[in-house]
Length: 274
Image 1 (cartoon, rainbow, N blue to C red):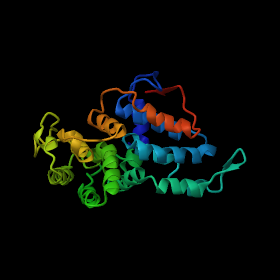
Image 2: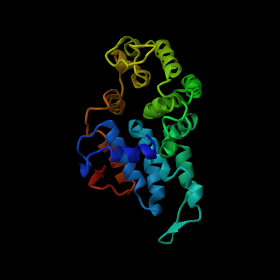
Image 3: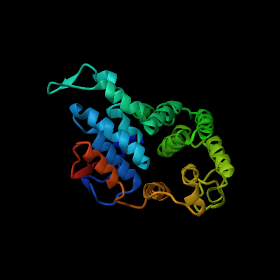
Image 4: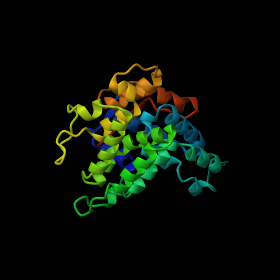
């Protein structure tokens, strides 16, 4: 989800629709609320936000979303600015972002699909040609062959960007899906490729599992296959959020607490306006 996704998401709700921070929210709404907390902070608090978002994407990557990067991913722009006489620690902010692997991967994916999140308001969907998915599929294959932490960060980023990938490619995601399916098969998973309950209406593969479902199978193979596991509560929470994104939950409050722990102001409510 990019910044323009965030804005459009807000405008898709009924007028005056306000959510209280703490009430159960869908995964998409939770990400929107958390991104709003991040991007609506005063400039002088940029360092706090950068550190909070870095911790959030480390501990609760299911809530990391591309829109969060707009607050601090280009600190060079504010290197010589100040607010209230307080100069920004741009180098520390840049360091925090450089260590935020999920968000950096989201930025990479955006570049591979034509920066659709940032350019959506300027593009005509009908006149804009589809972006080939090949570059995303190739990079995905490379990341999946890498170290466990590299693989994990990329998959969380890919999950968050799956809707934008679908939009940018105009549904031409077959090669990416095939890459993920091969990885699931290689890992010994079966549920994601055999279960057709979550099938997508793909003209070539009527019963193909969604990209999101394949990503969940790769991120949480033991939970997906039902094998015995000693996974942590945090891992279980992430799996539930990604596997069932539409069911409202207050689990995102753990991520809200990260902002509070860093001294970032959290509003009582967030208004989602049309």
